[in-house]
Image (cartoon, rainbow, N blue to C red):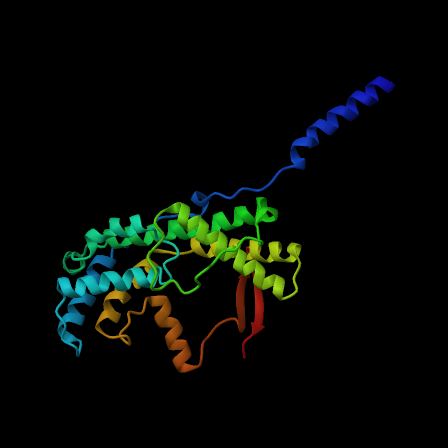
Length: 269
């Protein structure tokens, strides 16, 4: 009997040993779902481009010059702080610079959607990299190093490669952690808050659909005519109508998604 009990105890310990050092690892591919133009988008894009060219008060021709302006506006709307795309990404996209005018006339949206999907990929990779740092290497973040972080990167070039992207993400993560430390939070609180924040951002990334991609692209064209000219998607148009009329019909509550659940944030008269 004593031998049987001892053997059983050893087996149980061995079963649980692998779990002791277990650390969660995130993978960006789990959060990616590339979007494609909806069947109505090519014709809608053509109609919008035609109306802007012939009916907008600025009377601007949709040519190579405007195409180049739209190209820059599209990239800036996706990555205004030059923190997601790499220089090689931008070089790859450059072939679209003088093709946007022709693509709108042909109803060709796939090149623009490819850029949007690359942005989604880089965004997910960025969040996953930060999450893995928090989960597995938080204690290795060195705050004694003399490093510099430029927070306003609008005028800076895009990072040369993924290595520079990761280095930028690491510095920005350290900057956020330092801000929390200065606010009096301890390491445990900081890790929990940031892990929750980045997970929520990844969940929102998964909810992005083709209407979001189309809206960003068409608005790059519309706002190139005038900053106050915009395309409203059906969802945005509905919210605008509610705000303008100051009335809506519903369940009388404002809902908010949190940790995969829907909660009542407040009641609405």
